[in-house]
Length: 498
Ligand SMILES: *Cc1c(COP(=O)(O)O)cnc(C)c1O
Image (cartoon, rainbow, N blue to C red):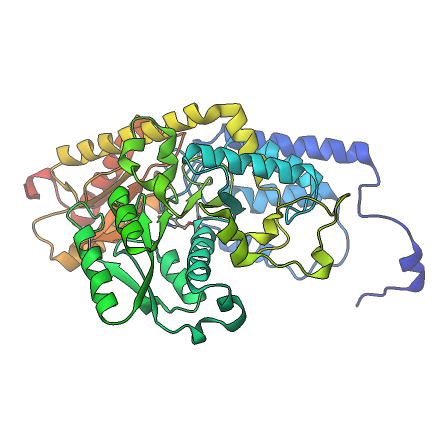
């Protein structure tokens, strides 16, 4: 198929544009497409499915011959751009997605132009990452000799935090010999409401998810600290070795916040590593009024959080901070000959990011964070977080005012779990109905909530981590849920319970 002749290989043409002015024109056109797309953020549906013919068009065989950039751009505009996840829209309420920032497209483009490899070495991008990590230490009141690493997201940040916990507990030997020679069974603890990435980290690290104790929760869905104490004591009596407690600073289901200060005290009394999963919630530290809810977070041994959720920064951008930078480095550092540190030149520089996590080649994630924080400032981003929490309270109020709707979990932060109900349905039918309502809303394009289970019941879940959401968008959501529920049950207000 390919015919790489000797003649071809001697031709010294790079992959750069032959005509830079033409490239500039295409690049400007691409920027216009991006700006127009962002500017029209609430025109059109939140989400639309990818039509069959578009799927087919995207399924082409490996392209062998070249095409013009303008042709590729036109195909992008026709077949890819209209089918985004939808999280730039103010009525995207699913899962925990950030909405992205206009300046983010600039930062991403400029980072792409530089194309830095941020695994290490001595260059400006590393300095920017160090600055961003220093800002994180300052925000979360971590000591200056703590360490941090930008990663893809909190899943990876949880893995890194737990790896440091494991290695610092089991000593240097574990890197050589693995867990099998460790004399006792190591166990960890988290809330029954914790994100599954914690269990996955336990699996990847070789403990198995059974070694993660899922502690029961209180009425507000935060961990029962008494049950945590009891579980630790019971495991010790059984000869097991508790090594890590993972606190939730905002659970994914309902936004519940664990009693972090009390958990930190339990951990320091028991000599157990305290890791906090603050994926979205930790960013509430940017708000003076919300910060007190997270008291104790600043005592964590390691903290995982995302910039791509509540800080609105483009995907992907997560972070892990580790209080003891020396333990963090000891868990991952390798210095093979080809990564030897030179005393001068490009190969110099003290701490290389690749010594603090599993990845060697890394993108310049820090630049979009640096842009966003410098342009908008921490205060304004904190203001969005406060507004989103106020909007969640407003949504809860709207729910409580509608006889067809009921609130299924307390609103701690920015997540509202609720359901449509009628007297005539069994629990199972009600679950089914709410599942259908969510799909109806998503397919209609009017709003995109998601679902979860709260105490066994299927809930319509609205998460608000979106700087574009307006209070009126929540009126639209509630009206749409009620209309969809009525349409499916053929009910009128007269039928409903309350
Ligand atoms: C989103 C989330 C995660 C996973 O983070 P990713 O950035 O998606 O990897 C972990 N924990 C909580 C509480 C989350 O909300």
